[in-house]
Length: 77
Length: 77
Length: 148
Length: 148
Image 1 (cartoon, one colour):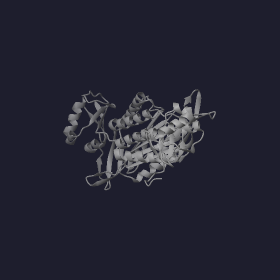
Image 2 (cartoon, helix red, strand yellow):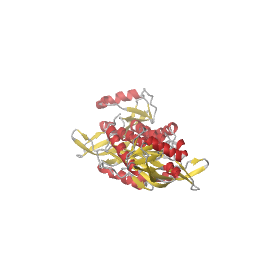
Image 3 (cartoon, chains in turn brown, purple, orange, red):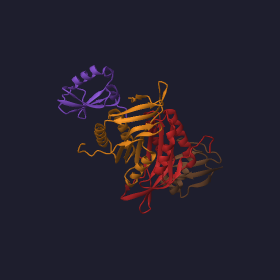
Image 4 (cartoon, chains in turn yellow, cyan, blue, green):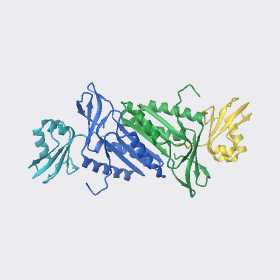
């Protein structure tokens, strides 16, 4: 069980990389906790999680090979 | 006592000229009546009268040398 | 002509895309601008009583129109927080597909530029003494009527 | 990439006035268009904690952004009666005074083009995964935050 993590904007700065894989994380809530333990600065940041391009504010099951993107507030335009 | 008449758009078509002078008309209401008697098609047309660039919907005194413009509905843009 | 600074508004013939590009370019030195809003009026090939419009011939009561443009302009600067504001209107014959009105507003944040642009277009259509004569393909014509 | 027709949206570097002029020109053959509405986002030299912004570096989550642009585009066509709709957004470093967003709507009558243009700009700013990094004169930076 492996998922691909994509980090954007300030989250890529905080994590120190923009693309990597992690193993044995099965839900988005679990992923948030895992990341916030590793990178406490994420706790003070509002960010969305997109799983295979779909953003959901609810807890979401992760499947093997899923692409999970960490999205800080958008600032295009 | 002389005033200058400027006619625009469809009113220039109806009157057949766009600039001329008339005498002895002292108020805008009187001017409307005078013109509508001469050119009955004006009766079915909504038009504004500007005296020296100022439009008023009320009856307006005309002074010697005034420029009086006959303005059918605008269609710029 | 009054003492007020009356800007050049009328353009003989159509407003070209390159004229619009030049107007945009000139704002690259104004670095406090964050948003531009542009409205362009283009001549349509409307069908009226089975005849197709091929051009509009614009005339204006010049002196009064310039005063009105000035008044509308001042009022927009009062109502909205604008950096810049430009208005150009064509006179003469503009064929279908060509541009006859160009309204251009700029501001720090988008709300002012956007709302001011709509405000200006509405007031221009309603209050400025300009008339469009719609010319059909057989050279007959009808005087244009703006929608409310 | 999905089966849906995804239009080219992203432009590497600033959007030039001549690119905008070309986009306008292409519409002169569409003779049922009466109104164009254009929004341009220009990079401002904001002052943040006494430092002056000299550029914005834009990055995007490409794949998701293109899907979002597509969804927003379809929704605008459903809500408004539009003839055309174009969106372009810059990626990479855009210096102050340059243009990074170009939204262009066209319709028969002005209300549709104008309202659709504002609708699109609002949704793009809120929903499309693009991030701006504001670069100061000393090359330090801060992540941009859009106003609500």
